[in-house]
Figure: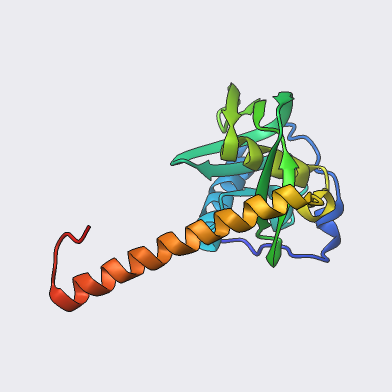
Length: 185
């Protein structure tokens, strides 16, 4: 396995459509292995072949401890809508809210050429849709949502709750270190 260089904007390859894989051979299997190694090093949850300069319809994801490899994937069904905060290895230091389907049924080949059909919801569905966009030369910034005032308020409230949880956890950890307490509740 090898770590590949992740292409970042404005690299023109990120805007090109990937071509179908005609044959699953050693090079494609090596690409899958390299994508996993690269994604692990970069601490991503998904990566598509165009992000490492290969215009092939291949991506991998790692969500909820499930590594999924897709060759020639296609979304066969999608429904619902979820507003999700996204980032991208190819657009470092930028995040944005995107509306994605909340349910995705995707099919594609695995590294052995076997057809796999996967139904997913929530974060996994969002990651699948995000990686599928990469195969079509689309970046999440192309789909960034314009938030309604209600959505902005809900997001701000959620962020405040998360910050409060972090502060409480930090205080508990300080007490543990200071007093050597094993369980502080």
